[in-house]
Length: 116
Image (tube, rainbow, N blue to C red; front, side, top):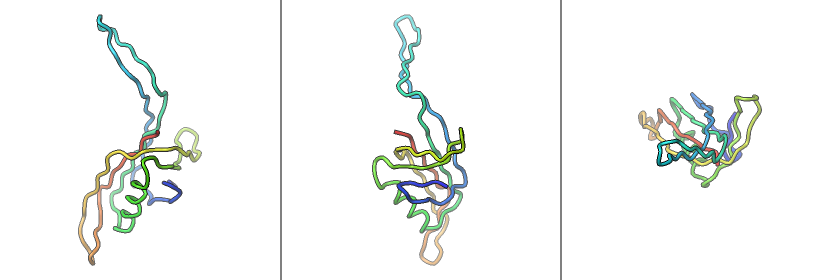
């Protein structure tokens, strides 16, 4: 379903696509707002996993730190097609659930990818 650097990642519990406009907002001396659009639409992807095994978490995090910009293929909600874009990773969170047989199980894994 979703590939990062040509590697299919584990299916997320939640996958959200946000459209983001990049704008610069300024105010004149009289208080009037001036907006300059820098980029009309960029995608911001949010991934959430309720649970991941140590192996899946390791594969996923390995992909996220592979490079500053990553090639990501994902389904586009506008037309249902698979879209490819260069993206960068923002904040990542991951909580340890427990340890079983000397391996960690992870919960509440959340990260975002922002289009270049």
